[in-house]
Amino acid sequence: MLSGSFNRIITVSPHLHRYRALNDLYPIEAITLDATPQLTSWLTAHVARPLLVGPDSESEQWVARVARDVGAPYMIGRKRRRGDRDPAQRPAAVVVREAVGPAR
Image: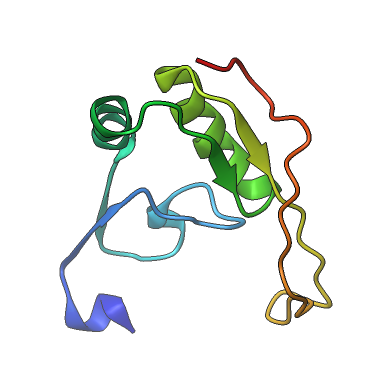
């Protein structure tokens, strides 16, 4: 659908789920930009002791990288799914006992 309307796709830090690259999804030129340096810079300048929280195991690759770059702890949630399009709907509760990574 997108490839019929556009000749190029540019996106920032896409969550591709089970795909390796945007080019696996679209037959047009696909450019991916990385937001990690800007996010790291902003956190370093504006947040004294951040705790980074990722919603699920798939997010850990990005959360861990930013946490490492800013020297912050992080934690990752667990998601239960009934299928690809039907996550279990439950109220979220966060209890922090121990975070992963170094504290500043």
